[in-house]
Image 1 (cartoon, helix red, strand yellow):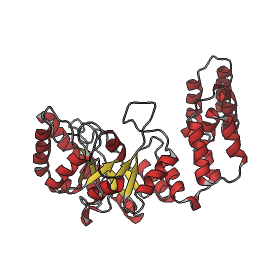
Image 2 (cartoon, one colour; image 1 turned 45 degrees about the vertical axis):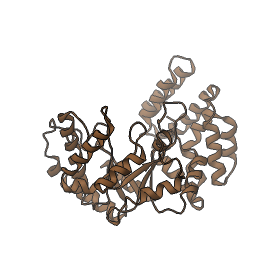
Image 3 (cartoon, helix red, strand yellow; image 1 turned 60 degrees about the horizontal axis):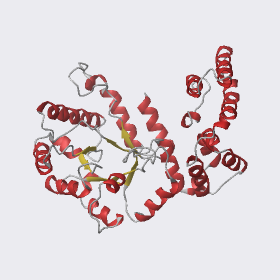
Image 4 (tube, helix red, strand yellow; image 1 turned 135 degrees about the vertical axis):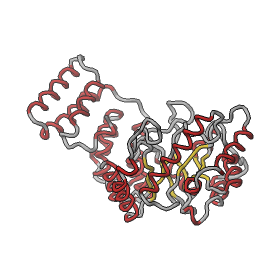
Length: 370
């Protein structure tokens, strides 16, 4: 089971916080799903829950943007409640306690923000008790500020999860610094709720406001952590590189565990496509200080892709793949490389070829580049 592998990976890499996918059961909350999945997968979820508890792993789920407890449309509302029921059932089947939370945004404003808030509060009070015990609410970047969410939290006595990027885009409490703001959030968490959680992300400067960055900027992250260094909390990273961003964060916070040779495997081809000079610097330096290493990574990623390095990059990858491939696979890759060099195959087409062969090549590092 893939989720079992993920929990093992997290444990081996000292990642103790994980958000379960909402897609564990396709159409899990939809009436089109006629499978009695709770009975069918009862034992599997039990075993997963036991593993998470044995590893002291803290799990949560985040229902999607269409789960709206303040919806005006009755059908949307009932589907939203059913979706919360589905998410809660998964955590219940894993036999996780109430510290495993469901994270939810407040929803729309529908032309009257206060009425929408009151509607959310009213619906919350009519939810099943186990859902209410797991639910926590988050500020967003369009409608509901942290101040709004704390107001709702006070009315229904559930925790608030702070999202730094949303707060930067739609701010409140202008006279408070980050530490003081988080002290307000912390008050919404009771002992039964477990450790306070926050969401951390960075702005992707090439996309719309609020879009999460693909890579973790080490300096930005370190500055944020310095401001909250005296607080005990869980931080969920919302960065597109997912587990690699988590490992990078751990390296930055705990530099004594940094292993450059292992980490470099994840980045080398990506960096080569951006900067040959930085590629050479890192490759020829046996051990860089962790902050310097990620400083060079950030510097390379801030520069445009160097189109002149494509052939070199893909040839290096091909030479690493070939020993693991059978004759048919080797011929496929070599022909694709030749067509790419002749201009008959696009770069994306060549990437697709590498991707199709990655499992056979036992490749676990190059997916960041591809």
